[in-house]
Picture (cartoon, rainbow, N blue to C red):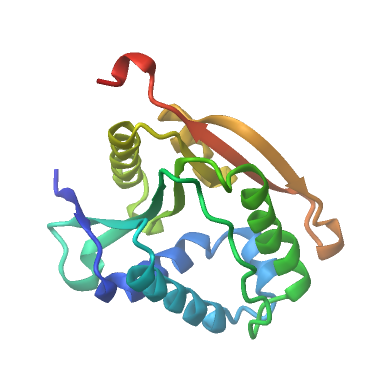
Length: 214
């Protein structure tokens, strides 16, 4: 196989945020969150957040999947970030909402709602938390996400910690196939923003089987 996992470096951040943007481009929620189709301000904030995490978060680990048959930035086709927290997952501070091009009311409901959900059900628990996992759409269904999830679960086994994440509908099946189970489900009504379906956030939990621990 031409795919392999290697640690990320700070120089990978712009490419990884590009993958993140591409992964969410066709999500109906994206059009509600950024009604003007201008997400450049949010992208800049995400790059700054990632750089800060590299510099200041000793609990965070970053990995990418590369395709040896591609070159340059295109060789990175997927990436993930998780946080190893044996002393308990830290509380999430409020995030910046006044971003040019972003609907602040939707942001408070969705982004703020996700932060509140995490603080309520995960903060304080010894665990590993998967905060990001994205694959460039044209490289999906090649197994890159599954490779990253398997590495994540190995980290959980090695640290003897459960693994938590917040899944969208798009990623749910991948996590379910790898042994994650629903921990809490929250639905947000977005009809006043023109959406016919609720936004669903599912906190999922994985724990190593007892017989797999040495």
